[in-house]
Length: 225
Image 1 (cartoon, rainbow, N blue to C red):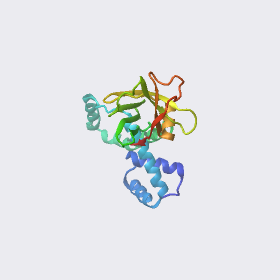
Image 2: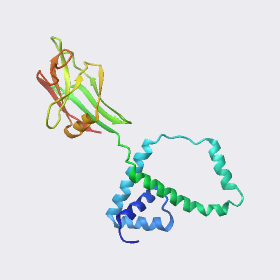
Image 3: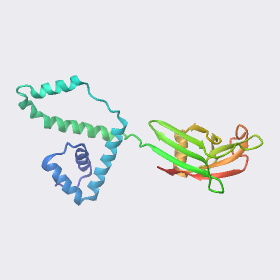
Image 4: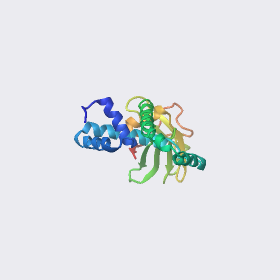
């Protein structure tokens, strides 16, 4: 195997994951993988990139006419000479895919955060779930065993950055109810960094100032699934 060159190795790793690296070349590359942690990392990189692409493309079954045309070309007399071009065509196709993948960012992997807000007796009050997938971002809250606060008050949920002002995520539901709020990309970035939300007691309809005005009753740290 030739000297370890970054760009060349990346191309070989991509061909290996695609399955277009075959025969003795594939066996040599597998031996090299056992010897080189760097080459193994390059293979893992391409496995993640192609897996993300696979998940972003909806599965579709080709029409039957396509298979008939492929079969007709394969079985056509004299096709043996044309078959000599198949390896060349395969390499060209692999090169095209590799070039596209180098400049086409991988689809973001789905993200999911969950948290349970509990009272002082460790009883669950709300179950929170934040999701980011298929271009949709939202934060949902499911009331478990919490009654509406007295005196016309409301429970309000806040996203707490590591620094700066709290961000309102809306009012929380009571038992057996569920509410959801849209998350912006900025909200999601804050959530990734701090993982912390809080609940305050506010006037009916929520805080009139855009910041917590009543006592902060609960906090929760979200975890990633």
